[in-house]
Image (cartoon, rainbow, N blue to C red; front, side, top):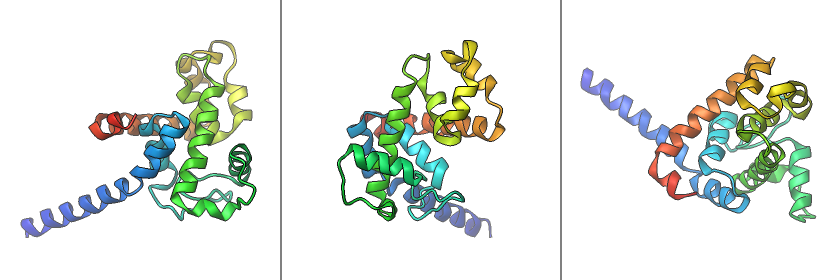
Amino acid sequence: MALLGAGLILLLWGAHVRKERQFEVPILAAARKYQVDPALVKAVVWRESRFDALARGAAGELGLMQLREAAAGEWANAEKLSQFTFDQLRDPVTNTMAGTWYLSRLLKRYVSTDDPVPYALADYNAGRTHVLRWNTGAAATNSAAFMEQITFPGTRNYIQAVAKRRDQYRAQSRWQRGR
């Protein structure tokens, strides 16, 4: 019986690993194109959709990186894609490109801070309006102070979960080589 249980655990773990690896090629391609840490992109995909390319959020977000129509439209305009439709975000390659472009844009927005990642992730999760409310005083440039200012526990947890998962992915040698 114990052998059967161990076999089932190995089978489930193998399925989980395959699910996490199935989008590595588009994640690496998008990360390279938009100069974002591929481990960060993969961690955002993990947190947003758990690698479900057909995921749909309660507010209409779509795909691996759970993009809203406005953000996808900004990406399409920046890339001069005149025939783009929101439904194209169901394609993992398109979704990963658009989401990574958006994440790159957010990271650049906070380049004058000691660590742009918490600010960008808060913006990605809760929106710019809330980030502007939270990044006053020392929190305007100090990410630790910024984290303390966040009034949404869900956003704070989101940032911590993505950062932890990013660190786990970074520890995997292929993600270091992918940078």
